[in-house]
View 1 (cartoon, rainbow, N blue to C red):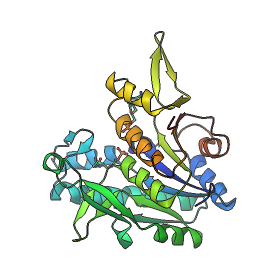
View 2 (view 1 turned 120 degrees about the horizontal axis):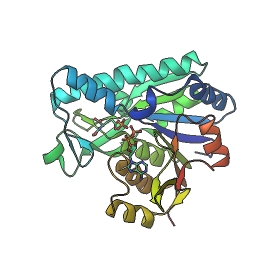
View 3 (view 1 turned 90 degrees about the horizontal axis):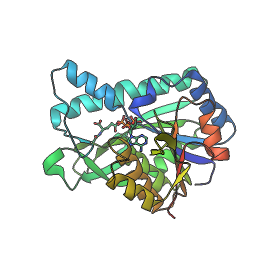
View 4 (view 1 turned 90 degrees about the vertical axis):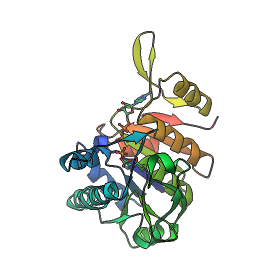
Length: 263
Ligand SMILES: Nc1ncnc2c1ncn2[C@@H]1O[C@H](COP(=O)(O)OP(=O)(O)O)[C@@H](O)[C@H]1O
Ligand SMILES: CC(=O)N[C@@H](CCC(=O)OP(=O)(O)O)C(=O)O
């Protein structure tokens, strides 16, 4: 796929706050032949619904400990509420859009993650049905994908949304992945002041994870970024979704947020 396509991951931290202008920009891009594919999260909304049901949220290494009862809620919130909310917002702003979860059309195939004994039904991506995504784009629709996976036996799994987005970007063969979140990029304290790093290498990332300057929800983002940059993806940008025209600036100028590069 060409530079005219990119994968965008929208985090649960920022989804509710994204202004109409963000979705209008996606419509403009679609009209101009730049085709985005959205993979979304929704961690905070899952926590909220689990809380209402009296189910405690537990994470090990950033991954939600997931059993069948939790999966019922994860699927309901991600593939139902959040996925459809994004599709509605896109359509309200004139962008044609179709929402799917990774189980539709076997879009995201998975196997259990290596530490499944700790986290339960969490999947590691083994394959992506890229032709289905391309077909949807060719029909003129913007695909919006919820990070639920399925295995050969038909068992569903929960997938971290950053990981799912990285795998989709890699297997679609796009040049660019944009991670939209609630911070302006990867930040570091320099001389007592917080600054946004314009560019980081793999070595910088490993060092910042070691020193705990990168922690929590930023860890799966940088890991997914490094993993897809090992493949065909050429650049990953971490940006703040509330900045005006953030996507055009990321795609056409690339001078916003933090750029992750291999070297
Ligand atoms: N070095 C860092 N720079 C910026 N944010 C960081 C850093 N390390 C950890 N974070 C945290 O990562 C969060 C983004 O991850 P997360 O809350 O999971 O977002 P999302 O819902 O978008 O996936 C930030 O709000 C911040 O608290
Ligand atoms: C396995 C796992 O942890 N899955 C995540 C999927 C949603 C997600 O990643 O949402 P954010 O991008 O908003 O964090 C979860 O259940 O919360």
